[in-house]
Image 1: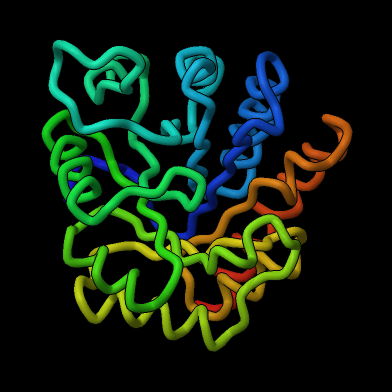
Image 2 (image 1 turned 60 degrees about the horizontal axis):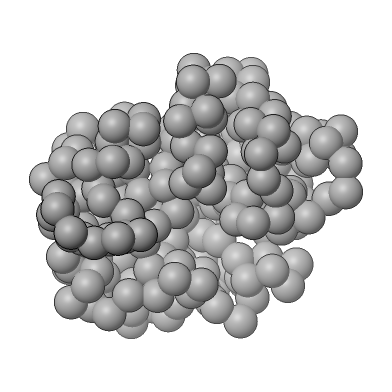
Length: 236
């Protein structure tokens, strides 16, 4: 586990995927940066790799992550994503094993080790409680617990899954933070997940699927406000 990652609970992850590109990605990152400051909530912004440096240079508070990397060493490997190149571009971390970019356990172990070597935090996706527990033994910084069948559906995980998947990770390594994802579309979804015990939650299509920048900006503000309010209510 990389020890230099400066992210604290509660936090939120925004992933534009390929819904947005170019200047729209940078503008959304700026909105996230302002919301992070406004509500004192850390935000991971998992940016398309080609926009990584621009996003990093345009923001001051969000944590800029790459959506994938390969575990190769410097040298050959045309079109593979070199970990050192992500660090040079300004990335603080990398997402691994998303359902749209799955890895075998062997590949995932190697990628986490390479991320640790170069100083990148790791946020690793898991589908089931069993997979989350297995991945916890590889000691990433963060595990995203999200049932694959709910991704992009607008239907969030229920309270039982949030509690069970969080416990499955914490029982292995309580230092790993757990992000509850999939189907997060509004303030209420965010609030319920954080209040139920998650360290974090996040959204992609619930934000970037909206048609205008103004609507996306308002949704970011609503969701980050929900993180803050749920966390504060939970810890009263």
